[in-house]
Length: 186
Ligand code: SF4
Image 1 (spheres, rainbow, N blue to C red):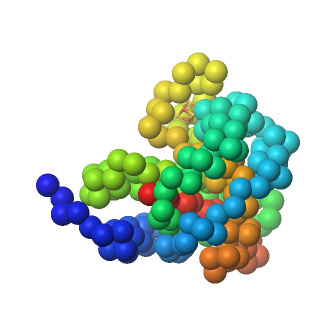
Image 2: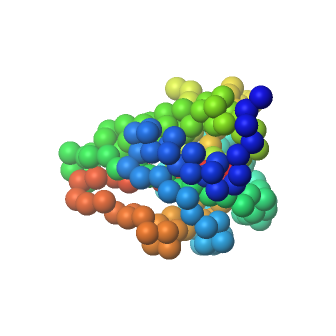
């Protein structure tokens, strides 16, 4: 049986574990700074990415902003992390896709470590962007891997720019880079 850890020691151990993954930075945050803004969720509804209503990890399938706020609000601990990836230039769409895929890989690896090594079975791991676990999403047929999906932070209405500012993270990490954020709540 795994030894039970206090909230602080568990937080520190998970931050240490995440810092060994290919992330730019991972740090514990005060979940009290999280705010849920209808305007941010409305950006999903504008469907500029074309994934609104087309993936099981995106709105509206993931629930209303109220439901997601309630889901997030259950947890008392948060760890924010980000990846910073180089782009050839600001139009490097392939580079952005590769950076998104790298974040999804980190999220999958984190799931495995949290359950295997930390014995965590009640947590919420939020990511960025539409799920890419399958070549083509099965939606509207049932999700092929519901255990692999991560709701985007913005789908919950969380303003990532504001969150980064409040927690001392850099949202923009320089010319010809793309930064993606993930958030673990437990
Ligand atoms: S796991 Fe596959 S079917 Fe499920 S949301 Fe992701 S891409 Fe779609």
